[in-house]
Length: 207
Image 1 (cartoon, rainbow, N blue to C red):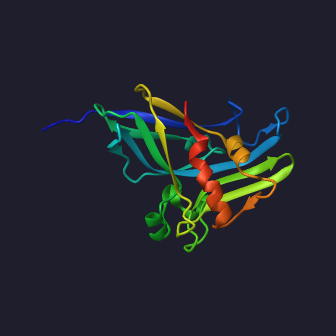
Image 2: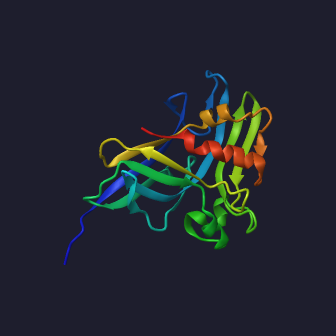
Image 3: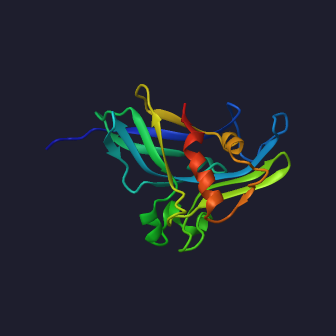
């Protein structure tokens, strides 16, 4: 009988503002523009590792709620075969259509987590709340039915092989790309949610 040795790969999600690690609910008065983030939450799903474009690992039951108000939720541990090769990390930001159509689920997908609307609108894939230049912003980005599917995929190159990787999320870069003077409250699927969802893959980097 062949024995497969396993190793643990940890993915740690950390928010940054202007290249500095931040704490949620922390007001950055000395930065420009002034920014205060009270809530930053999002789903990470369908995690895969690839080697030169070929999938070498796919996480089973891959749905994780990252809540930066809860430090216990900001890391993901993957159990990998020891000899696996990979040079790219791929994941979805949000919940895919098939899982949404499957109705209500438990665990990180439990509606009591505050990341679910209704069976028609489905899960909230990404949630950002706070103030920028004293203007309140609330971005609840969701929707799974065409043409308002806001689940997006990001791919990050990996150089070298380690046991821990820091995934940096840049909420300030999202706000630079979105005209928050005109779009400051998004609470349902639609055109504005799609525009913001299109920017989400680019605000994640691998440190």
